Image (cartoon, one colour):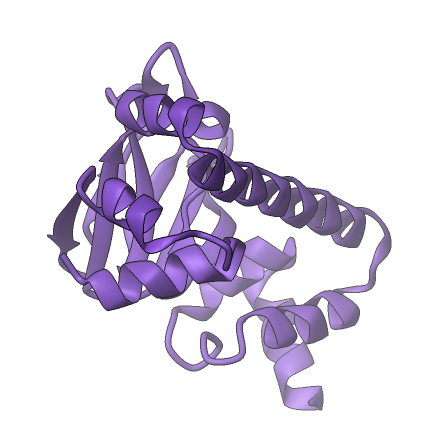
Length: 191
C-alpha cells in the first residue's frame, strides 16, 4: 500500500487524523491498479467499495439516451471517487468509472469503512469531509452548467484541472462542459 500517497489523500480532507487512526484506516485498504482505458465501474455492476485515487487520472461518466458518453467528473491523484452511498443503489453502481491513465487506487470495503467511522471520530470527520466536498462540488457544477457561459466554464475547468487539458481527449472535456467538440475547439483557439 502506498501509505505516503494515502496520507496525502487523507490530509486533503482532514489533517487532524492521528497516526493510530491512519493505521486503522490503512489496514482496510487494498491497493489495486487499473490500466489506461479500463472501466472500473459500470451501471448495474455489483459495487460495495470506496475508492481513493492514489495515482493517475480517472473520470466518471454516463451514457445519454443516444448512447453518447457524458463526463460527470474528473479525478486526479489524491482524490476520492464519489462516496459509495452517492454512486450506488441496492449495492450496484449507478455510473461508469474509467481509468484515463494507468491508475492506482486504495479500495476499501464500504461496510468496513462505515464500521470504522462509527467507532472512530477522526475517521468519521474524514468521511463527513469527503461527503461535504462532494456535495459542494456537485452544486457548484450545477450552477455553472445552468448559468455560466461556455467560456467561463472552460476557464473554471482550467483552474480546477490545470494539467488535464493536454492529457485527455477533448471530447471528454467538451461533454463535461456541456458543449460540442467544435465549440470547445473554437474556445481553445480564442484563448
